[in-house]
Image (tube, rainbow, N blue to C red; front, top):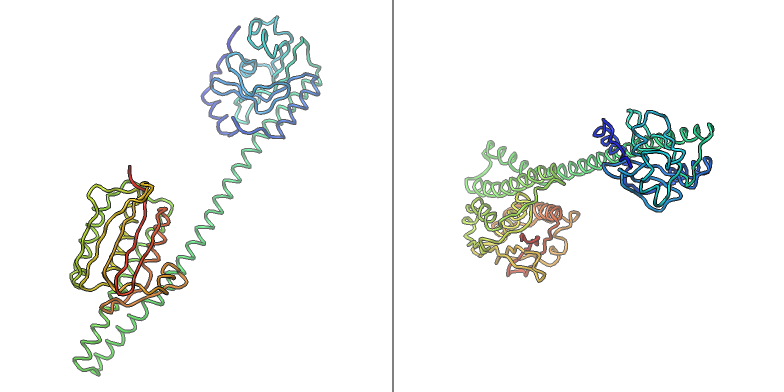
Length: 412
Protein backbone atom coordinates (compact mmCIF):
# COMPACT_ATOMS: atom_id res chain seq x y z
CA UNK A 1 0.00 0.00 0.00
CA UNK A 2 1.17 3.51 -0.78
CA UNK A 3 0.09 6.06 1.84
CA UNK A 4 -1.82 9.09 0.60
CA UNK A 5 0.75 11.81 -0.22
CA UNK A 6 0.69 15.31 1.30
CA UNK A 7 0.20 18.22 -1.16
CA UNK A 8 2.98 20.83 -1.36
CA UNK A 9 0.51 23.56 -0.29
CA UNK A 10 -0.89 21.56 2.64
CA UNK A 11 -0.79 24.37 5.24
CA UNK A 12 -2.58 26.81 2.97
CA UNK A 13 -5.07 24.08 1.95
CA UNK A 14 -5.91 23.35 5.59
CA UNK A 15 -6.35 27.07 6.34
CA UNK A 16 -8.79 27.31 3.42
CA UNK A 17 -10.71 24.28 4.70
CA UNK A 18 -10.94 25.80 8.17
CA UNK A 19 -12.13 29.10 6.69
CA UNK A 20 -15.26 27.42 5.32
CA UNK A 21 -16.26 26.25 8.84
CA UNK A 22 -17.74 23.06 7.43
CA UNK A 23 -15.41 20.42 8.90
CA UNK A 24 -17.01 18.20 11.59
CA UNK A 25 -20.36 19.98 11.33
CA UNK A 26 -23.86 18.50 11.37
CA UNK A 27 -25.13 16.63 8.34
CA UNK A 28 -27.20 18.84 6.03
CA UNK A 29 -29.93 17.83 3.60
CA UNK A 30 -28.48 19.72 0.60
CA UNK A 31 -25.24 17.73 0.77
CA UNK A 32 -27.04 14.45 1.53
CA UNK A 33 -29.10 14.87 -1.64
CA UNK A 34 -25.95 15.34 -3.75
CA UNK A 35 -24.37 12.02 -2.69
CA UNK A 36 -27.70 10.24 -3.17
CA UNK A 37 -27.96 11.66 -6.70
CA UNK A 38 -24.31 10.82 -7.50
CA UNK A 39 -24.81 7.25 -6.31
CA UNK A 40 -28.03 6.87 -8.33
CA UNK A 41 -26.63 8.30 -11.60
CA UNK A 42 -23.31 6.46 -11.39
CA UNK A 43 -25.08 3.30 -10.22
CA UNK A 44 -22.75 2.75 -7.26
CA UNK A 45 -23.78 1.63 -3.76
CA UNK A 46 -21.50 4.16 -2.05
CA UNK A 47 -20.96 7.90 -2.45
CA UNK A 48 -19.41 10.44 -0.09
CA UNK A 49 -18.46 14.10 0.17
CA UNK A 50 -15.05 13.69 1.80
CA UNK A 51 -13.04 16.46 3.46
CA UNK A 52 -9.37 15.86 4.28
CA UNK A 53 -8.17 17.14 7.65
CA UNK A 54 -4.59 16.98 8.95
CA UNK A 55 -4.67 13.21 9.48
CA UNK A 56 -8.30 12.23 8.95
CA UNK A 57 -10.82 11.96 6.16
CA UNK A 58 -14.29 13.03 7.26
CA UNK A 59 -17.57 12.62 5.39
CA UNK A 60 -19.73 15.75 5.20
CA UNK A 61 -22.34 13.56 3.50
CA UNK A 62 -22.46 9.80 2.81
CA UNK A 63 -24.63 7.02 1.52
CA UNK A 64 -23.86 3.32 1.64
CA UNK A 65 -21.32 3.47 4.52
CA UNK A 66 -21.78 3.59 8.28
CA UNK A 67 -18.57 5.20 9.50
CA UNK A 68 -18.23 9.00 9.48
CA UNK A 69 -14.44 9.21 9.14
CA UNK A 70 -11.23 7.28 8.55
CA UNK A 71 -7.46 7.56 8.39
CA UNK A 72 -6.14 9.89 5.73
CA UNK A 73 -3.13 7.61 5.03
CA UNK A 74 -5.37 4.82 3.72
CA UNK A 75 -7.86 7.09 1.94
CA UNK A 76 -8.39 7.02 -1.81
CA UNK A 77 -9.43 10.68 -1.62
CA UNK A 78 -5.99 11.59 -0.21
CA UNK A 79 -4.54 10.40 -3.53
CA UNK A 80 -7.26 12.13 -5.57
CA UNK A 81 -6.39 15.65 -4.34
CA UNK A 82 -2.77 15.37 -5.60
CA UNK A 83 -3.66 13.92 -9.03
CA UNK A 84 -3.50 16.11 -12.13
CA UNK A 85 -6.56 14.49 -13.71
CA UNK A 86 -9.95 16.16 -13.30
CA UNK A 87 -11.31 12.88 -11.92
CA UNK A 88 -9.19 10.13 -10.36
CA UNK A 89 -10.63 6.79 -11.49
CA UNK A 90 -9.52 3.40 -10.16
CA UNK A 91 -11.30 0.75 -12.25
CA UNK A 92 -9.98 -2.18 -10.19
CA UNK A 93 -8.14 -1.53 -6.93
CA UNK A 94 -6.61 -5.04 -6.96
CA UNK A 95 -4.72 -4.09 -10.12
CA UNK A 96 -3.46 -0.75 -8.78
CA UNK A 97 -0.17 -0.86 -6.84
CA UNK A 98 -1.28 2.06 -4.66
CA UNK A 99 -4.28 0.18 -3.28
CA UNK A 100 -3.80 -3.55 -3.80
CA UNK A 101 -3.16 -4.23 -0.10
CA UNK A 102 -5.07 -1.23 1.26
CA UNK A 103 -7.17 -2.09 4.38
CA UNK A 104 -10.22 -0.56 2.67
CA UNK A 105 -9.74 -2.97 -0.25
CA UNK A 106 -8.93 -6.23 1.54
CA UNK A 107 -11.40 -5.37 4.34
CA UNK A 108 -14.65 -3.38 4.63
CA UNK A 109 -16.01 -1.69 2.60
CA UNK A 110 -14.01 -3.86 0.12
CA UNK A 111 -13.43 -1.12 -2.45
CA UNK A 112 -12.75 -2.30 -6.01
CA UNK A 113 -13.92 0.73 -8.00
CA UNK A 114 -13.36 4.38 -7.07
CA UNK A 115 -13.97 7.69 -8.85
CA UNK A 116 -13.23 10.96 -7.05
CA UNK A 117 -13.71 14.52 -8.27
CA UNK A 118 -11.67 17.09 -6.28
CA UNK A 119 -13.60 19.86 -4.52
CA UNK A 120 -11.57 22.92 -5.54
CA UNK A 121 -12.20 26.27 -3.86
CA UNK A 122 -12.22 29.48 -5.96
CA UNK A 123 -8.71 30.10 -4.60
CA UNK A 124 -7.51 26.81 -6.12
CA UNK A 125 -7.21 24.65 -2.99
CA UNK A 126 -8.46 21.05 -3.04
CA UNK A 127 -10.52 20.57 0.10
CA UNK A 128 -11.60 16.99 -0.54
CA UNK A 129 -13.63 15.05 -3.10
CA UNK A 130 -17.06 14.00 -4.23
CA UNK A 131 -16.56 10.29 -4.84
CA UNK A 132 -18.49 7.19 -5.88
CA UNK A 133 -17.41 3.69 -4.83
CA UNK A 134 -18.34 0.14 -5.84
CA UNK A 135 -17.41 -3.30 -4.56
CA UNK A 136 -16.87 -4.67 -8.06
CA UNK A 137 -14.56 -3.52 -10.89
CA UNK A 138 -16.20 -1.15 -13.35
CA UNK A 139 -15.95 2.18 -15.20
CA UNK A 140 -18.00 5.33 -15.73
CA UNK A 141 -19.66 6.53 -18.90
CA UNK A 142 -18.80 9.98 -20.23
CA UNK A 143 -22.21 11.20 -19.08
CA UNK A 144 -21.59 9.84 -15.56
CA UNK A 145 -18.17 11.54 -15.40
CA UNK A 146 -19.76 14.83 -16.49
CA UNK A 147 -22.48 14.45 -13.85
CA UNK A 148 -19.87 13.79 -11.14
CA UNK A 149 -18.02 16.98 -12.13
CA UNK A 150 -21.21 19.08 -12.14
CA UNK A 151 -22.29 17.75 -8.75
CA UNK A 152 -18.79 18.30 -7.33
CA UNK A 153 -18.87 21.93 -8.47
CA UNK A 154 -22.28 22.30 -6.82
CA UNK A 155 -20.78 21.08 -3.54
CA UNK A 156 -18.18 23.89 -3.66
CA UNK A 157 -20.91 26.42 -4.50
CA UNK A 158 -22.86 25.19 -1.46
CA UNK A 159 -19.73 25.67 0.66
CA UNK A 160 -19.45 29.23 -0.67
CA UNK A 161 -23.15 29.94 -0.09
CA UNK A 162 -22.93 28.48 3.40
CA UNK A 163 -19.94 30.71 4.19
CA UNK A 164 -21.66 33.82 2.78
CA UNK A 165 -24.75 33.06 4.86
CA UNK A 166 -22.64 32.76 8.01
CA UNK A 167 -20.90 36.05 7.22
CA UNK A 168 -24.29 37.69 6.62
CA UNK A 169 -25.56 36.32 9.94
CA UNK A 170 -22.47 37.67 11.71
CA UNK A 171 -22.99 41.10 10.09
CA UNK A 172 -26.67 41.10 11.09
CA UNK A 173 -25.74 40.14 14.65
CA UNK A 174 -23.21 42.98 14.73
CA UNK A 175 -25.82 45.43 13.40
CA UNK A 176 -28.35 44.25 15.99
CA UNK A 177 -25.75 44.57 18.75
CA UNK A 178 -24.88 48.09 17.58
CA UNK A 179 -28.59 48.98 17.51
CA UNK A 180 -28.97 47.59 21.01
CA UNK A 181 -25.96 49.59 22.23
CA UNK A 182 -27.40 52.72 20.59
CA UNK A 183 -30.74 52.20 22.33
CA UNK A 184 -28.95 51.63 25.64
CA UNK A 185 -26.92 54.79 25.04
CA UNK A 186 -30.10 56.76 24.36
CA UNK A 187 -31.65 55.34 27.51
CA UNK A 188 -28.59 56.29 29.57
CA UNK A 189 -28.57 59.79 28.08
CA UNK A 190 -32.26 60.16 28.89
CA UNK A 191 -31.67 59.06 32.48
CA UNK A 192 -28.72 61.39 32.94
CA UNK A 193 -30.60 64.35 31.45
CA UNK A 194 -33.59 63.59 33.69
CA UNK A 195 -31.41 63.34 36.79
CA UNK A 196 -29.47 66.50 36.02
CA UNK A 197 -32.65 68.42 35.22
CA UNK A 198 -34.23 67.31 38.48
CA UNK A 199 -31.30 67.35 40.90
CA UNK A 200 -28.88 69.98 39.60
CA UNK A 201 -31.39 72.67 38.71
CA UNK A 202 -32.48 73.17 42.34
CA UNK A 203 -29.06 73.91 43.88
CA UNK A 204 -28.01 76.05 40.90
CA UNK A 205 -31.24 78.05 41.15
CA UNK A 206 -30.67 78.46 44.89
CA UNK A 207 -27.11 79.62 44.27
CA UNK A 208 -28.31 82.20 41.72
CA UNK A 209 -30.99 83.41 44.13
CA UNK A 210 -28.41 83.65 46.92
CA UNK A 211 -26.09 85.74 44.73
CA UNK A 212 -28.93 88.08 43.73
CA UNK A 213 -30.10 88.51 47.34
CA UNK A 214 -26.54 89.16 48.52
CA UNK A 215 -26.00 91.73 45.78
CA UNK A 216 -29.25 93.46 46.69
CA UNK A 217 -28.29 93.37 50.41
CA UNK A 218 -31.80 92.15 51.21
CA UNK A 219 -30.65 89.62 53.83
CA UNK A 220 -29.51 90.07 57.38
CA UNK A 221 -26.20 88.53 58.41
CA UNK A 222 -27.99 85.71 60.24
CA UNK A 223 -30.19 84.97 57.22
CA UNK A 224 -27.14 84.95 54.95
CA UNK A 225 -25.35 82.43 57.20
CA UNK A 226 -28.47 80.22 57.33
CA UNK A 227 -28.92 80.38 53.56
CA UNK A 228 -25.26 79.62 52.93
CA UNK A 229 -25.49 76.62 55.28
CA UNK A 230 -28.52 75.28 53.42
CA UNK A 231 -26.86 75.87 50.06
CA UNK A 232 -23.67 74.14 51.24
CA UNK A 233 -25.62 70.99 52.09
CA UNK A 234 -27.45 71.09 48.76
CA UNK A 235 -24.16 71.41 46.86
CA UNK A 236 -22.62 68.52 48.82
CA UNK A 237 -25.48 66.30 47.70
CA UNK A 238 -25.18 67.58 44.12
CA UNK A 239 -21.43 66.91 43.99
CA UNK A 240 -22.01 63.39 45.33
CA UNK A 241 -24.66 62.80 42.69
CA UNK A 242 -22.37 64.11 39.91
CA UNK A 243 -19.57 61.82 41.14
CA UNK A 244 -21.96 58.89 40.85
CA UNK A 245 -22.99 59.96 37.36
CA UNK A 246 -19.35 60.17 36.21
CA UNK A 247 -18.59 56.72 37.68
CA UNK A 248 -21.77 55.32 36.19
CA UNK A 249 -20.93 56.69 32.75
CA UNK A 250 -17.38 55.26 32.78
CA UNK A 251 -18.66 51.86 33.91
CA UNK A 252 -21.30 51.81 31.22
CA UNK A 253 -18.59 52.39 28.62
CA UNK A 254 -16.89 49.17 29.69
CA UNK A 255 -20.13 47.25 30.22
CA UNK A 256 -19.52 43.57 29.47
CA UNK A 257 -15.77 44.18 29.91
CA UNK A 258 -15.50 44.00 33.67
CA UNK A 259 -12.05 42.98 34.89
CA UNK A 260 -13.04 40.06 37.10
CA UNK A 261 -10.26 38.94 39.41
CA UNK A 262 -9.43 38.11 43.02
CA UNK A 263 -10.12 41.13 45.27
CA UNK A 264 -9.06 41.61 48.88
CA UNK A 265 -12.12 43.09 50.63
CA UNK A 266 -10.29 44.60 53.60
CA UNK A 267 -7.92 46.59 51.38
CA UNK A 268 -10.83 47.97 49.33
CA UNK A 269 -12.66 49.05 52.51
CA UNK A 270 -9.52 50.73 53.91
CA UNK A 271 -9.11 52.82 50.72
CA UNK A 272 -12.76 53.90 50.87
CA UNK A 273 -12.58 54.89 54.54
CA UNK A 274 -9.41 56.90 53.92
CA UNK A 275 -11.36 59.05 51.44
CA UNK A 276 -14.54 59.23 53.54
CA UNK A 277 -12.80 59.93 56.87
CA UNK A 278 -13.54 63.71 56.93
CA UNK A 279 -17.26 63.07 56.44
CA UNK A 280 -17.28 60.40 59.16
CA UNK A 281 -15.56 62.78 61.58
CA UNK A 282 -18.01 65.55 60.70
CA UNK A 283 -20.91 63.29 61.76
CA UNK A 284 -18.93 62.00 64.79
CA UNK A 285 -19.41 58.43 63.62
CA UNK A 286 -17.11 55.59 64.66
CA UNK A 287 -16.06 53.23 61.87
CA UNK A 288 -14.78 49.66 62.22
CA UNK A 289 -13.36 47.49 59.44
CA UNK A 290 -13.95 43.99 60.81
CA UNK A 291 -13.15 42.20 57.55
CA UNK A 292 -10.37 39.61 58.05
CA UNK A 293 -7.21 40.64 56.20
CA UNK A 294 -7.09 37.46 54.09
CA UNK A 295 -10.71 37.31 52.88
CA UNK A 296 -10.97 37.56 49.09
CA UNK A 297 -13.82 37.44 46.56
CA UNK A 298 -14.17 37.18 42.80
CA UNK A 299 -15.19 40.63 41.52
CA UNK A 300 -14.30 43.71 39.50
CA UNK A 301 -12.38 45.84 42.03
CA UNK A 302 -13.49 49.23 40.69
CA UNK A 303 -17.13 48.16 40.59
CA UNK A 304 -16.97 46.72 44.11
CA UNK A 305 -15.36 49.94 45.36
CA UNK A 306 -18.14 51.98 43.74
CA UNK A 307 -20.83 49.85 45.41
CA UNK A 308 -19.24 49.88 48.87
CA UNK A 309 -18.46 53.62 48.72
CA UNK A 310 -22.12 54.38 48.02
CA UNK A 311 -23.41 52.12 50.77
CA UNK A 312 -20.90 53.36 53.38
CA UNK A 313 -21.60 57.00 52.38
CA UNK A 314 -25.32 56.32 52.83
CA UNK A 315 -24.69 54.76 56.24
CA UNK A 316 -22.80 57.90 57.29
CA UNK A 317 -25.51 60.15 55.85
CA UNK A 318 -28.23 58.57 57.99
CA UNK A 319 -26.15 58.12 61.16
CA UNK A 320 -24.96 60.69 63.71
CA UNK A 321 -22.71 59.95 66.68
CA UNK A 322 -23.15 56.26 65.96
CA UNK A 323 -21.30 53.22 64.70
CA UNK A 324 -20.70 51.93 61.18
CA UNK A 325 -19.11 48.52 60.62
CA UNK A 326 -18.09 46.42 57.63
CA UNK A 327 -17.85 42.68 58.20
CA UNK A 328 -18.11 39.47 56.19
CA UNK A 329 -20.08 36.27 56.56
CA UNK A 330 -19.66 32.99 54.70
CA UNK A 331 -22.91 31.59 53.25
CA UNK A 332 -24.10 28.10 54.16
CA UNK A 333 -22.85 26.68 50.86
CA UNK A 334 -19.41 28.23 51.59
CA UNK A 335 -19.22 29.22 47.92
CA UNK A 336 -20.19 32.86 48.56
CA UNK A 337 -19.32 35.63 51.01
CA UNK A 338 -21.65 38.41 52.12
CA UNK A 339 -20.04 41.80 52.78
CA UNK A 340 -22.21 43.41 55.47
CA UNK A 341 -22.28 47.19 56.00
CA UNK A 342 -24.21 47.94 59.20
CA UNK A 343 -25.01 51.23 60.94
CA UNK A 344 -26.82 52.39 64.07
CA UNK A 345 -28.57 55.22 62.25
CA UNK A 346 -32.17 56.27 61.80
CA UNK A 347 -33.14 53.28 59.65
CA UNK A 348 -35.34 53.11 56.57
CA UNK A 349 -39.15 53.23 56.78
CA UNK A 350 -40.76 50.04 55.51
CA UNK A 351 -42.58 51.79 52.64
CA UNK A 352 -39.26 53.14 51.34
CA UNK A 353 -37.51 49.76 51.79
CA UNK A 354 -40.04 48.19 49.45
CA UNK A 355 -39.19 50.65 46.66
CA UNK A 356 -35.50 51.17 47.45
CA UNK A 357 -34.19 49.64 44.20
CA UNK A 358 -37.09 50.61 41.97
CA UNK A 359 -35.90 53.21 39.37
CA UNK A 360 -39.47 54.39 38.80
CA UNK A 361 -39.81 55.15 42.51
CA UNK A 362 -36.43 56.82 43.12
CA UNK A 363 -36.71 58.32 46.57
CA UNK A 364 -34.51 61.02 48.07
CA UNK A 365 -34.35 61.55 51.84
CA UNK A 366 -32.50 64.11 53.88
CA UNK A 367 -29.71 62.81 56.10
CA UNK A 368 -29.50 63.31 59.84
CA UNK A 369 -27.77 66.66 59.23
CA UNK A 370 -30.24 67.64 56.51
CA UNK A 371 -27.84 66.40 53.78
CA UNK A 372 -29.42 66.38 50.36
CA UNK A 373 -29.35 63.35 48.05
CA UNK A 374 -30.62 62.18 44.71
CA UNK A 375 -31.54 58.57 45.51
CA UNK A 376 -29.28 57.60 42.61
CA UNK A 377 -26.37 55.92 44.42
CA UNK A 378 -28.21 52.79 45.59
CA UNK A 379 -29.86 52.30 42.19
CA UNK A 380 -26.47 52.37 40.49
CA UNK A 381 -24.99 50.10 43.17
CA UNK A 382 -27.74 47.57 42.48
CA UNK A 383 -27.27 47.84 38.71
CA UNK A 384 -23.52 47.23 38.86
CA UNK A 385 -23.81 44.47 41.45
CA UNK A 386 -26.01 42.60 39.00
CA UNK A 387 -23.44 43.21 36.23
CA UNK A 388 -20.97 41.28 38.43
CA UNK A 389 -23.62 38.60 39.16
CA UNK A 390 -23.68 39.75 42.77
CA UNK A 391 -26.75 40.46 44.89
CA UNK A 392 -27.62 43.27 47.33
CA UNK A 393 -30.03 42.85 50.22
CA UNK A 394 -31.13 45.27 52.93
CA UNK A 395 -32.51 44.93 56.45
CA UNK A 396 -33.56 47.93 58.50
CA UNK A 397 -35.40 48.89 61.69
CA UNK A 398 -36.59 52.47 61.97
CA UNK A 399 -34.68 54.22 64.73
CA UNK A 400 -32.26 51.29 65.20
CA UNK A 401 -30.19 51.10 62.06
CA UNK A 402 -29.68 49.46 58.69
CA UNK A 403 -27.51 46.71 57.23
CA UNK A 404 -26.74 46.10 53.56
CA UNK A 405 -25.21 42.85 52.36
CA UNK A 406 -23.42 42.32 49.04
CA UNK A 407 -23.00 38.63 48.19
CA UNK A 408 -20.13 37.55 45.91
CA UNK A 409 -18.34 34.30 44.97
CA UNK A 410 -15.51 33.27 47.29
CA UNK A 411 -11.97 33.25 45.92
CA UNK A 412 -10.60 29.76 46.48
